[in-house]
Length: 366
Image (tube, rainbow, N blue to C red; front, side, top):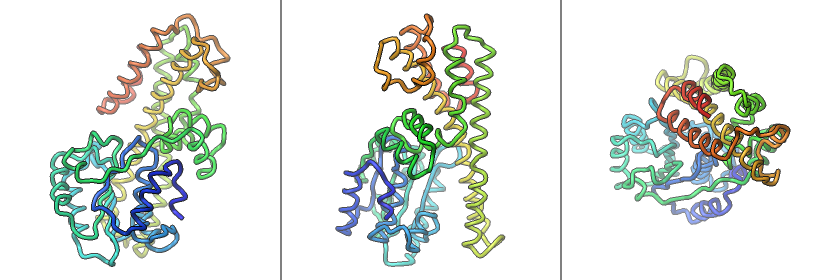
């Protein structure tokens, strides 16, 4: 069963299961909580369960929903400058208002609903006010407070919390086959977010961990070393973005197979798939920069904990940092200043500042 793939949200899953059992879903839900804890995955499983009560994962309906090929399942994510555009919403609304292919539910998942543009939100609002029958909207957002209030107020809210490090590590090892030591460290760095942990553990970023500790805690504070470190992280980001290419090519070939073979997939569908792949690669690349910031913050928090004689179990990078003295320059004031500047660098990257420039500027000043 597909529900078994979701870990650590027992109360939420019980609530969704009761909705399935009663057979009376609301017309709209807002799944909200930290990024990368399984909200979008749960939304797809809920969509599958609405059309297959056991969410078996093996029937044609379940497989089609998971592969985004079901005629009555629609998945929407940001385009362009990380915004959901009015045209996307209008296409979605047109699709959900078409005649149903079965007597089951049409389900529309809108991921990152907090970035609905004003025009897109207004277009969606009209439909939420007068929803068509047998259509369920599932909006997914990191922060319910960032969703337009008039949209959020028309949805039943379903909260997701961060997962424990042990659960994240278990998912990485048992569901993704990752090395236990790598999984343990990734789980610590990801702060309960499975999506981040998978990217950290399976990407190239962790290979830079020792280098980052060495450069950022060095009393020499060499400008050349810090520029070189920023460039290495940038190269790791590009490598992670490129690493998706093979899977993307396989997915496109699979979709062409469903359509009847090479050249049979419509130009419009192929264009959407390729655009989605570009977004995924860009997001993966940008995520590496955010992981670098998270790890940089972890290094300085570790220094603070060591200076305060904290228990070793609370130190993320105990295998590297305990081997070296934190250094006289790594005072509480410096650590506090560094953490503030790391947070500022993250905001700058979110505002589309060149991430390499943001990272170089950060490394110069901490």
